[in-house]
Amino acid sequence: MSERNELQTDALAQLTAGLKKLAVADFAALDESGAPPAAAEAFCLFNKLSKMFKEVFEFSRALSGGDLSVTPPPRSNYLAMGLKAIHSQLLHVVWQAEQIAAGDYSQSIDFMGEFGKTFNWAVESLKKQRGEFDSNRKMMLDLFDSLHSIIILIDGEAGKIVFSNERARFVCGTRTTMENDKRGGLFAHLFKLAAEPSVNAGDMIYWDACSSSWYKIIMAETRWTEEKNVKLFNCVDITKEQVEYEHMKESAFDAITGLYVRAQGLPKVEELFRKLNPNLNLCLAFFDLDGLKRVNDTLGHAVGDNLIRRFADAMKRTYRAADVMIRMGGDEFVAAFTARNEKIIQDILARFAENVEAENTPGEVRLEYSYGYCVAAYQENITIAQMVEHADGLMYLHKKARKEAKGMNINDR
Image (tube, rainbow, N blue to C red; front, side, top):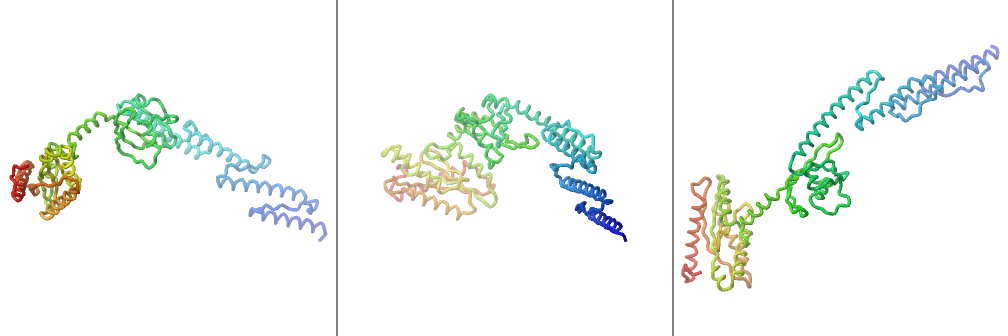
């Protein structure tokens, strides 16, 4: 074989090997300097084609991985024209998606075939949902404006009011933030609640010292935009009701002892009686504080009031919050409580006696008392008035027996 034929055969072998590598994405270039003159052009064209394939391969791999920031092949690479068109279209779709996210639902695609149709359908669905959302929100805000209570929606993260109804604007003004506001009051309290993630929805009572008003605050979380929730506050002015309640409380409790007065306490005993079950009895104990009149007459009413207060303190340490303690008037008291049996009743009365004795410290006027009690079973045919009368009668007998034991007359005070 001639030398020329051998060079041609070798060049053909190099081209064949290069094509095999190209087929498996190995884009190694051929050595053009060693090519025979007849194959030089073929080597040059192969290397150009290999470079174009490499650019297309790397570009398509980046696109398939979602990297739209990749630089496309140069215009001279005609093999990449289709991919470059897809790249450009995808960049435009991303831009349109950003506009949709910002609330522009006028975007549509008239290219990319079935994808474009699906995209347009999704945009129309979002547009419809947004319309319904905006309509519902407008109805909600119109309703809020018609209410007499204060309605404020606060974005706690941004620290600003996103909506306040007409009543809120009248009471709190048109401020939207707390910046440079040192007045405090209801407005500042709501901002504090909105900014605190640990504060859960619910009801609370708040005293606004700035306006001398009581408010019932109902807090909830609501959707303001499709992406953001805000805190909703419904503030109802309950000043009148609260003042009436405070007056009622003052009239319901004895000023010296804090115990129920007779008129308010006996209905509470009725409630306790109605709540009995077959396993519980109601015990009504009637107490009379010995020697109160004598203390008032000889030592003064301040000492007598202190005697009454110490007796009530012993009651509070003995009986539970669910029990009913009453100052019937003067030196007479009632304690009503539930117990399963007589032994428990006796234990409770003994514990009260210990607590009274604990009040008898050196330097204090000694506390002594007489008592009687009446027990009623579940659904027993007896009234609270009858129980009081019966316990009072037993207390009188107890007082009489104690005074006779001391050689005193029952009428001695």
